[in-house]
Image (cartoon, protein in one colour):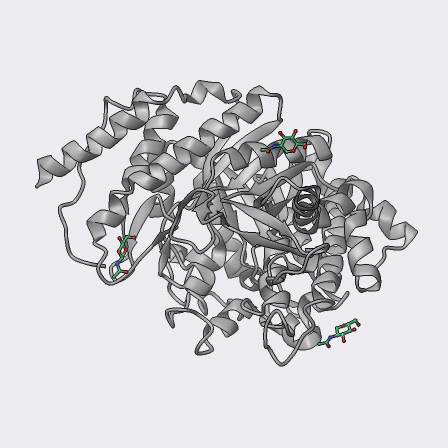
Length: 512
Ligand SMILES: *[C@@H]1O[C@H](CO)[C@@H](O)[C@H](O)[C@H]1NC(C)=O
Ligand SMILES: *[C@@H]1O[C@H](CO)[C@@H](O)[C@H](O)[C@H]1NC(C)=O
Ligand SMILES: *[C@@H]1O[C@H](CO)[C@@H](O)[C@H](O)[C@H]1NC(C)=O
């Protein structure tokens, strides 16, 4: 069994290496290659070390919110195992690690209570251990989780009050960690968080209205734009603070991370081409245009009219040029059909742009289906997304802050099958090849992070979607490198894929 399996793995890797000329040397010399995680998804220890409750702690504890009925109280127990996890990264040979700071661990009650020294000490230890291994910390300040107290006091992102809290939190982090952290991002995927939290109501605070969802509270065509407005201003204020008080001394840079699906027109009509442009504007330019040019894209103003808040002239000045780099999370591509000139069903994710997005054209999927709903493998999408950003934003430096492949688990899938993840290795290989082509054409891309270092708590999906380069047995917390981890390590070492390969896969056919 062992040798047959090893042979199969060796064979798939040979195919990968034979069809490929992908090599680390095709990327710029100081390119960051890393893995990514977020605090809520891996840390666990949800009430340890004086941590306060976050909105996600409270939300995930309510029955029915998480598909498998699970929560992240323990997750990967990373809070206690961070040194072991840094060893995993060190063994991969990455030179950067993207992680987020739990706001409620640093400020259990937001600005209405004290800074928690235990939380600060945890991130100091994590950062010191990374730096000692030559791994650059690449820090996200907000990856969906907010102190629950801020939700209760004033509705968190729905209130302009949040600007004071976010800037206060960010400044604590710059002060405490900025001597060693050279890469900051304010927000992770605010565009996606808003769609899930305020349009379809499946993320906290679970607000929405018909036809996009049935939540009881909320307004899917109004609140998303209020929330985005407050997030954009929070970002701009925070970057202002970093630039005026910390950047010169600490020498870092600061950006934001946007979820970027690549939208292709479903048909070759002008209407569908315009629809694809609109879908990109409503998803990416919604956040990026204000931070470069000081206002929302015109397509949004035309459709949303007075539901889209306006910036005062001072706010426009505050917003302009507030990014040192763009963080791009990219997984997938979809087709887009126009719903402005012809009627069609509006889905919650894209409906406000008057488009309908689908993974199929004439019954043929846009790419191979992964374990995540609507996520298809379309490697060219990353080149197109990066080129779009390059053209629209004057080739501002970019980092691919997430890219990865989901495995969906079920009762019959074996641990071995999950570890033998040829599909993921091939996915990363193909996306890196497409990215390198964008770089050859001049795109200023400076880093790439695989989502994720290890299997973890995947929001709504609980533990049923696995994105890790490392398999995690959530009963024992054992981490096992998957084939993709071995592939990534080999790629980073720059060695020939057909040699130096350790086929020490575990012969364990127990089911998940
Ligand atoms: C949402 O807000 C808009 C604009 O104020 C309003 O016209 C609409 O009736 C509201 N919808 C709901 C469900 O409250
Ligand atoms: C789409 O239409 C344009 C302009 O009419 C044409 O040049 C192009 O070849 C068409 N593309 C496809 C894939 O049909
Ligand atoms: C379980 O997942 C595997 C791999 O994705 C798939 O081939 C199989 O059909 C699934 N089985 C069930 C019972 O859903």
